[in-house]
Length: 164
Image (tube, rainbow, N blue to C red; front, side, top):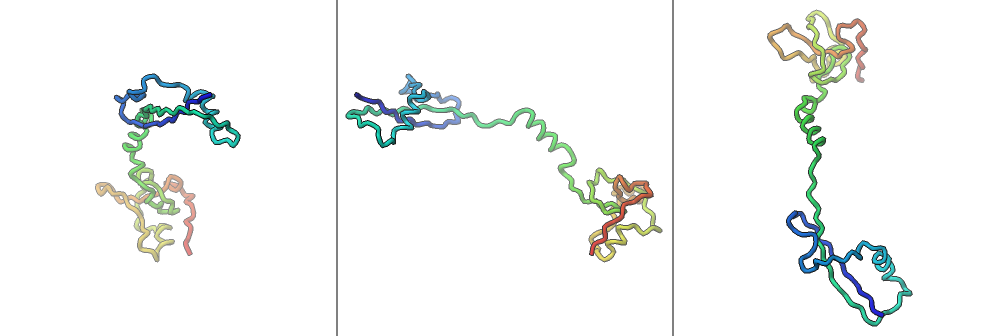
């Protein structure tokens, strides 16, 4: 009794012009995917396998084409939206003058600045010169300070947390 032992070798290719099979092995043996071949391969190292006097060995090579990954249209549109929206170019860096809540510059509400009023942000952080009131950059209008939507034109300003 003789058996045929097939040694499979898979070559990965990015080139679409290459064929799936090697040119010298045009007659592709589909036993690679059959349950018999899988079972024979799994049992090849079993201790009770019968010793066969003659084995025929064949080397079979086939080329598998794996195209490079291309993002979907939906993913490309999402990336374009992220690149064009302003939110990705900003970070919360504008503190509210009443409650010190950090907010995006585009989301801040701008209230007229009152020179006679001592704002809670100035009082709480008077010993820290890095934390100051944030003014609007438009110099053509009167000075305006940043406030959050909760404190904007409201008598119920949130209490500022005072650091130790």
